[in-house]
Length: 187
Image 1 (tube, one colour):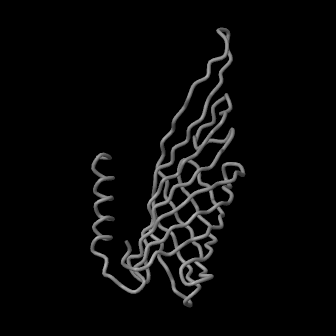
Image 2 (cartoon, rainbow, N blue to C red):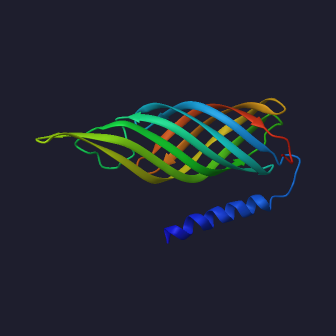
Image 3 (cartoon, rainbow, N blue to C red):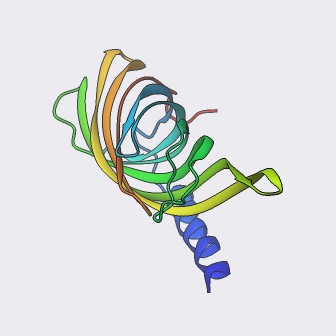
């Protein structure tokens, strides 16, 4: 069943992008951000996005972000041995439902899902010595939250955002980014 769900969901999203009506604000967007992740301890995070405007009121956004978690992990049941060097990679696809207030101020709501990959090491000391085990955990995450696009110039601006990710553990991310809007009809 899982092998069918992801391809069908991807096909639905791609079909909606292909059928999007051309409009004056049917534009692409590239962005980079940094900030903090909270709820798994407090950690810095960095990432980037690429989006395509479907209409004045919706944009499909692909995002990748990296958060070093140290000894914190996404696992729901703590192990008696702490994790070491935990790294979280979040790849997700979401829709930004935009609410144009003014030409330069556009709040948005986030709805989406993605894959969370948490890689870390366990060092277990026993009678035979120390054994280091590499653990790779894959989880699904539901993303929601909101943000604001503030245009400083016609094709670029800043984007503060608050995102909540629901997975094995729920956590939030507060970030500030810079975005660049590609012209309609690119490339």
